[in-house]
Amino acid sequence: MSTSSTRTAETGFYARFGKRLLDLFGSAIAIILLSPVILVSAVLVKTTSRGPAFFFQDRPGLHGRTFRIIKFRSMLTFEDSYDAEGNELTNDERVTRVGAILRRTSIDELPQLFNVFFGHMSLVGPRPALQYQVERYDADQRKRMDVRPGMTGLAQVKGRNSLTWDQKIAMDLAYVRNVSLGLDVKIMAKTLNVVVSGAGIRFEKHDELSAHNGDLRRHIGEKKDDA
Image 1 (cartoon, rainbow, N blue to C red):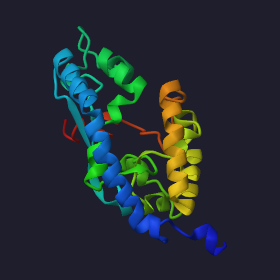
Image 2 (tube, one colour):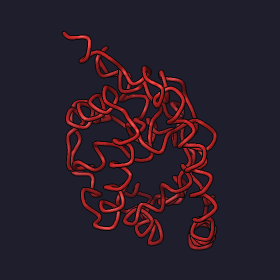
Image 3 (tube, rainbow, N blue to C red):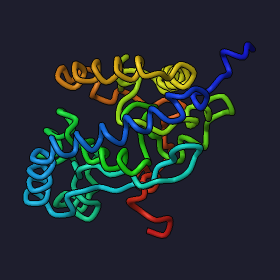
Image 4 (cartoon, helix red, strand yellow):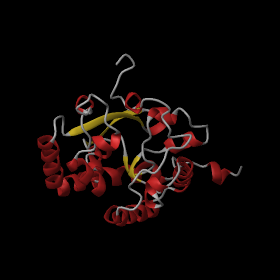
C-alpha cells in the first residue's frame, strides 16, 4: 500500500493547528448567532414532555478517547416509554412531536457546538459512532478516529443515513486522508443544502457494523445490565 493511502490527517499545518482554530472561532460565532434557536428549542423540549431538555451520551472520540456528546432530547424518557398495557414503545413511537421537528431540521444536533468549542468534536469530521460499533472496527477502520468526530462530514453530504456503515466508513477514511481547509469549507456548504432538503435523514437499515444484536437501550446507556 502506498504512503499516500496510509497517510492520516494528523500531518499538515491545517490539520494540526488551523482546523482547531476554525472550530474554536466557528463554534463560538455559531453559538452566539444561534442562541435564540437553542434557547427556544430547549424550552420547547422541556415544556412539552417530561425529562431534561438535553440528552447526554458517552461516545468514542479522537483516538478512541471517550467524551460526552450533547443533543436536544428528542424522545420520551425510558420511564415514559410504555403504552397503557405496559408494553415498551418502539424507538419511532418514542420520538416526541417536538423531537420529530428537531430531527427533521437537524436542530437536535446544535448543542454539539459546545462539544466543538471545548475540543471534543470538530465542525467537520466523521460522525461519532457508539462504543459497541467501534469495538467491531478492524485496524484500518479505526483510522477514522485519527481526527476529532464532526458535526457533519463527507458521508453526511454524500447520502447520510441511506449509506451502509461500510460506505460511511470508506468516506470517513477518505476524509481522514485528504482533510484540508478547502474540503472542510465544501462539506459545510453542502451540509446546508442537505439540512434544508432533509435528504438521507431517515435511517434505513442496520448492517454488520451497526446492528446492536440485542437491547439497543442498554448499548446507548439508557439501561444498565442489571435493569
